[in-house]
Length: 104
Image (tube, helix red, strand yellow):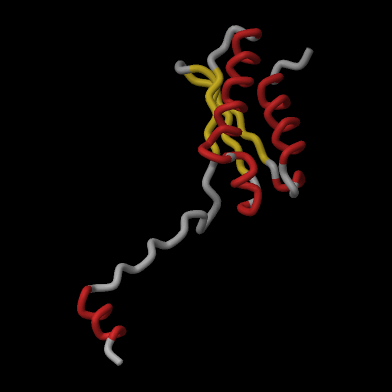
């Protein structure tokens, strides 16, 4: 049995779900709150891991809790946001600019 079953399990599950398994990196940190697993992956695969309404991420977290219970540890998952991961907010047109566009 491996000492780090939780990180190996997470890596196995995530690599099975993504298109770029070579980009999957799992970091494991232990502190007084338990085990923190940080997941880094290709930006194009973020949607597959998070899932619709976050359901895939919730399911992975639930499975990690079970693995943690077997090893008497509290396991938390942090999905690292890739560089430039968030979309820039769309600009809101002012009323004047909208009216200007409507002039014929």
